[in-house]
Length: 362
Ligand SMILES: *Cc1c(COP(=O)(O)O)cnc(C)c1O
Image 1 (cartoon, rainbow, N blue to C red):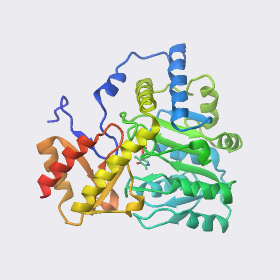
Image 2: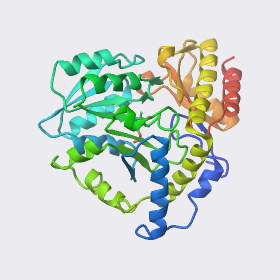
Image 3: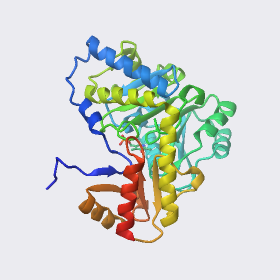
Image 4: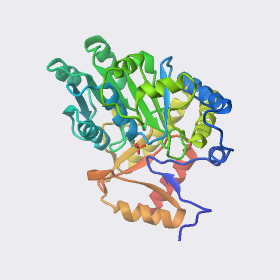
């Protein structure tokens, strides 16, 4: 029987641990979504998000998980006669390429081995050799624990391929890793809130550039639920096109206030420290799955060099300590395991978990 009063502590790379004070925000009274109280909540929240991501462009709140915006970016900004270049470096980037294909668009993949980064030179070469309307990129590939050099890639894109739209999945990066949206010149980026925002799942924050919005006007078949034009029209009134999950937006508002009070530099630094701590443990006891240079500060994928049974160990730690960490993703199951260190997870939480792991696998 599940003990609902004492649910497991989460160290999986999403959903992550949610603090009680954040949970309380989801219990506040519901507002009328066309009323002035909601508009105030919406406007205040998106204004804070603009500061957090250093942007003056569009911020949309989508009542969906992040996968909805995978689809939205493609359906709003890529015509049926255009081609998307999908930079693939793991399970999530692969899935985005599949989604683009499912939306009926032409997709070409630029693949690297899992654990390897997508590098600017490879993208440049591919883009120079063909005609592409957009590129899909992963900021942080959650299946391999890898952070792509997105600042370098963006610099190259601005210099050499300024007309290609840049869509970036920042799901396991947003808030925890630097993201200067306007300076980077990105067109669409997004994250669901169950990752580094440390809120229960059910809401996604999307940033959309003015030029992406402009382009979407002429793209046919955008659908309804994720139509950027409708989002923009509503956002001008501090509303969403359909009824939003207001409890989550209250929690998001609360988390944004805390992030700004802490200061983004400090937030990034806090994640860096947790990343370094976990990597040091991983290197001493095992090995990192990806090159250390590209290892993520939001989660660590550890190579299971000792061949222990990951699933059994996860069960054992849950039995004894009511705590769950992540097995490897997809084909990396058992070969790797993953520990999240993002959002409201603390260094003390990590010390406790890694201590239990040490006890379990000696
Ligand atoms: C979790 C995750 C997703 C999927 O997000 P949902 O909110 O479940 O749709 C996509 N991309 C990355 C990198 C992720 O970590």
